[in-house]
Image (cartoon, rainbow, N blue to C red):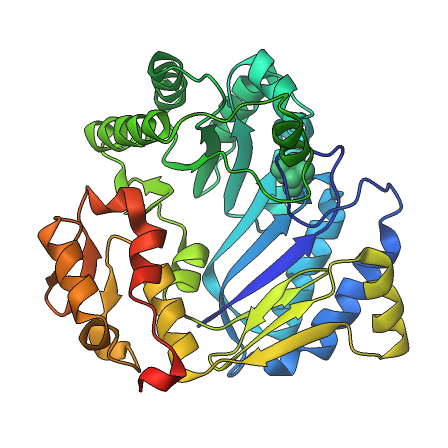
Length: 374
Ligand code: SF4
């Protein structure tokens, strides 16, 4: 069962930390038309045509008129065998939420709302360049909770400059008070070519210390565990039955089709990524010219991807599915991480311990292999 990802490359304004592909242009129709064309052209790539999850990501999908969301979902249903219980997620920002729009998205088939809350403090939201304020974040959570979606989630950011543990604690308390069934919490990182990177370079912003970020991650894990939300991926916590099926499929290496500028696709063997430029995308789709690059993954690359994504999940990495014996090749590094109490092998799966979750990406890359290692 594959996933379908639709990248909606528009935002109202640019958040200072963001390196996703988007444009603030209000002229959206040409891109949406090109995406419909791409979806039709590439529908045969979807194996047996069965689709278990559809995900509208971006950018800001909630900028789309609900009609456009409905059209894409109907088009997917016409082209693929979309499961009757498919998970259909729409990312939304608080400034786009109203009771009317929620009910239209629901009627269109959306089953899961993902709200870009980020913070419940006006000063932080302003600093991040978000288009909404704290009151809009709270109001929109209340509206989503009442709207009758199968599930919903919010995003929060920690590791902000000079963020005290008490501030983060307060943010988590507000979120939990609103009864969210799922939380994605990300540590702020400085991505190249963002406004934040420029501010840091100039010395106008000083990022928080690793120790503070680490303490906030610990508090996040404690708070979520106490509230009954399972820590099923480094940045993701959900009540049973409310985990993201779409993202879980990514982490498990399930094929997916990505439509739209900058969208990535994976068919089990090759990765493909579309050009991250709206005008170039529209022109190439119209002319039938290539608008993507692709790469066939080698056994070592597939092994490394499984390590990188699988290790971030609570289920860990199924060692039988690794094409290259990464633990055998990196046996001394592996033993070091075990002795430090960062990783374990449980029932044939490599899993991080709670302490190891602080270093997931580094531990995975320590275990990477090359094609010469085989
Ligand atoms: S709304 Fe989301 S995608 Fe758009 S700039 Fe902000 S963080 Fe990036």
